Structure formats: structure tokens, C-alpha cells
Length: 375
Figure 1 (cartoon, helix red, strand yellow):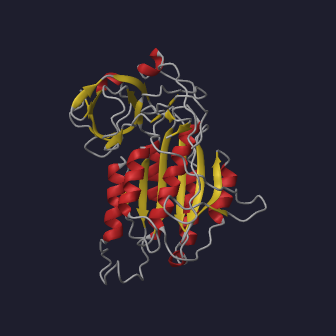
Figure 2 (cartoon, rainbow, N blue to C red):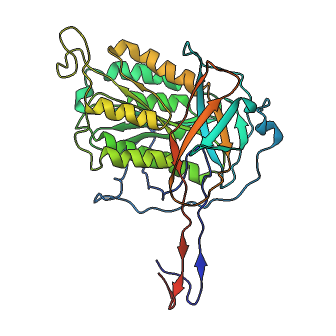
Figure 3 (spheres, rainbow, N blue to C red):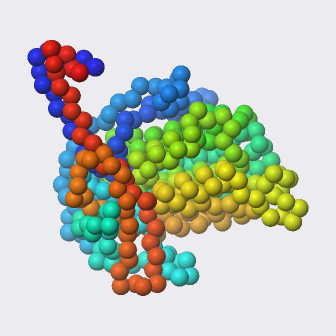
């Protein structure tokens, strides 16, 4: 890295500028929309691979604290744009009752947030008015040939649940990840991308998910708006060709802070996963998908029949439209450590909450000029 001769440089990186904690550099990502006269472009591989692309940090700008209306969960116009401070830790919280029904209408005073067991002061609170950035990932490996028709139908129904202000992208993945449609709120474009999926190749699940996580985190760093973020990934098999381990993926997902919903489908003819009585066997891939969803505050689904996919996607859509967005300024800044989070629902003893397990506090980065050159 080259610098100005005879100068001293200091760079400080904040804790959080969006619901997804942006604490690592962005990954370059090639995109092309389906139906616009071109083949899908291949996303570059993550760090450590021969095709890894250079990364860049997007600038972050301090912005005002939330207003009283945001702070108390008052009615908010749908065209309102929320902006973050660089220190805000933002959480998407799902609350259900004993019947597993979503509990709506809660206020700021109904929540208590704990970081490493220490109570925090909630400084931002909003209900479902916050817009959503959603990545829809579809396994397009060769083994999906007998399932892709059902998947296309269910996924297109899913994108029709997007609300004004929401954005989604579509990624098909086999041995590599292809962006079939970049982030857009245009539903016909997303429909066309989903229906362009063609099964072929092997399954690089972990690498493809890693790239999707980095892409969504990059989008958050480029904009100061507070937006909810989620990934919904559907696959039918174990990872067979990734260059990354599951631990690499889990670390990236926890650093980014977005929810990762996982769907694992099976064919009734898959004797490795379904026995003669129709019972499904759990394997290493199922355990990984369940763990990823749990750590990121999402859910995992293992439908036995392809016709159940519409219901699965609808459950995810219902949850995303029923979440609370909560933010606080952490008492400890820039230590680079992972901090455990817990959200308790007050005044409702039968309620249970779910959010991501924690976040990484970004460590300040300093560069000093010694002898006329940055070191």
C-alpha cells in the first residue's frame, strides 16, 4: 500500500453501520440480469482461491441518531428512510407465543437486550416498516434435475411476497455461483431469473453461500440506510466441490450479521436420505444447514415432499414480515471480539424470541507512515 510521502495516516473502522455488521472488506461480485440479452456472469471466488478478486472498503459516514418516532415504534410512513450511526448494533428479532404464532404489536419497552449478559439501552426500535434486502439462492447442480420445476414455482411465488421498497437478487449455484438477477424490486425480472435456472455440475454450497454473504454485506456498507437483510438458500445435497470449509462460512455469516434461512429438499428416490418407510435420515449437510440458520437467527426447513415447498417459502415470508428491528450502542467498542447477544421479551411470559447469536466488534485499523512509506 502506497501513501503520501512524509504523512501520518490514521484510519478507524466503526462497529456497525447496518443490520449486517460490516467488519470485513467487500468481495467483488459480477452480476447480470436474466432476460437482458446475456448469459449469467460467474461470481469471483472467495479469498484463497486462484480467481479471488481484490477487495475494497466502502466509506462509512456518521449520521444522526433515531428520532423519537423510531425510538418508540410509532407509525412510520412506508417511504421513510432510516439511517444508522456507525456504532449501532442492529438486530432483527422474531417473537412467537406458545402456539408458535408471531406476536405482533409489541413496543420498545417490551424488549430487554443483553450483550455478554450485560443489559443494553435500546436506542432504535421499529416494526415491519423497515425494507428488506433478500438473496434467493437456488441449487442448480445436476442432482436438481427432478426437482427444479417445483423449486421454480415455489420460488417465484416467494418473490411475489416482496413489499414496496424491498429488493431481492437471485443466485443459482452448482460448482460456482452465478448472479441471475442483481438486487432489484422488479418482480418480473426476478421471475425470469428464477425460471432461467438449469441444473448442471456439482455442488459448491459453502463457497456459494460465502460469496452471497459477502455480496449482501457489501451492499450494506455502500448504503447508510437501515434495512433488514436475509438469505434464503435451497439445496438438495451435501457440499461436493467448495474451496471453503463450513467453519469459514459460519465465521463469515456471523461477522456479516444477516439471517440465513436454509431449505434442504430430497427426492423420494434418494435411498441415501429416505428409507423404505419414507423416513428421512439426517446427515452432515443437514446438521450444517441447521447450525447456520440457528446461529444467524433464522430457521431451517427439511420438507419431505417437493409439494411442501410453497408452504416453506410462505412461512419464511410470514416471518420476515413479522420481525422487530432493534438497535443499541454497545458499551464496549472496537475490541475485535465476538459478543454474545440475548433478547428477552418482557411483560409476556409465554413469548419467546429469536435473533442472531452475537456479533463481532470491529477493531480499529491504524496505518503509520515510516520513512516516507506506509507500513
